[in-house]
Image 1 (cartoon, rainbow, N blue to C red):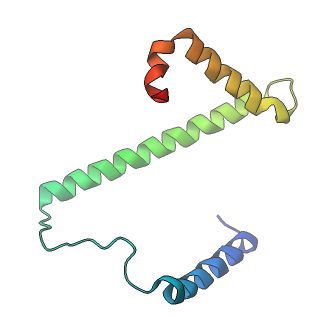
Image 2: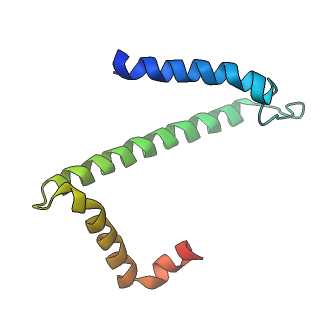
Length: 107
């Protein structure tokens, strides 16, 4: 749970930006969407729920993997300053071991 020490500055920034946006950019939507042809049905709603739950599960899994990686780095006998370089070396070694798989990411 967020503490007041971190919540109050964020809430203040949101309030100030909300007020300033009206004066600077106007109150119209940033990305207006024409909803006249939008027909939501039960199958579409069900698909949206499935997509949302899947995305949430993937986010939880990715967060868990990040924590596992941080815990693994904490066990290394190196100063924390070297962790990005070690992570980069791992990625580079994976790319060098199978360049065809990583070629699509660079084009």
